[in-house]
Length: 248
Image (cartoon, rainbow, N blue to C red):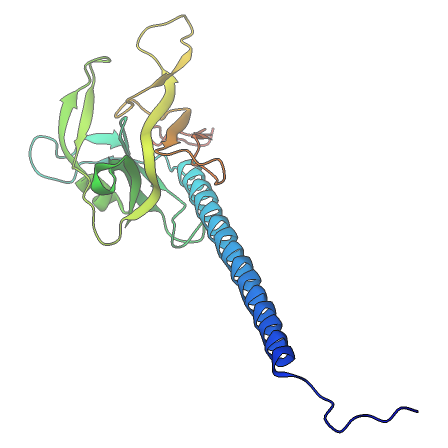
């Protein structure tokens, strides 16, 4: 059997090569981990954005479907005092209603006066949909009425409402939108007999619509993310608060 030489071992070149290979392997593993973590962070960010959009869309649908058909009287002073009206301000860029659903308490809390309105986005880019929640009472709802005017189409008295105000409790339901507008399914001023329902831009003081539509589109389309879409909520109102019901 051949004996090993006393001077057998690794040369400096071999050690340098081994260290270089180990360093390259370590760097490669570090780069792979960084790429993987970066991909995971981007995926998680997109999933969070999608959950946020889906959650806001679902909350918006619940708020509309939770509409309470209540009639209140103007509690402010002036000639409008005592004027009874449906608690529904329904315009193309703003919507005020009473709902049994709230963002903070879901379906379990007390009714809320919801003030939804469209306002410009940051730096004037696009628009955003904002909502205020105010605990409901007949007095608080009546304070929203500041006057009475005449509807130019139906020629009936309709309430004038106080303007919406952004505060620290305002919640952004949708942001970075190209447009956001409301529509209301109801009977038009003219039409066949019986009149067929049509989508209107305004329904303030005209009773309760059969459905509410909120049309939205993103300011910048991104196919890789869930985008805000149009929400339509049917309103199943079978009892009018203006009619006194009794047993027969």
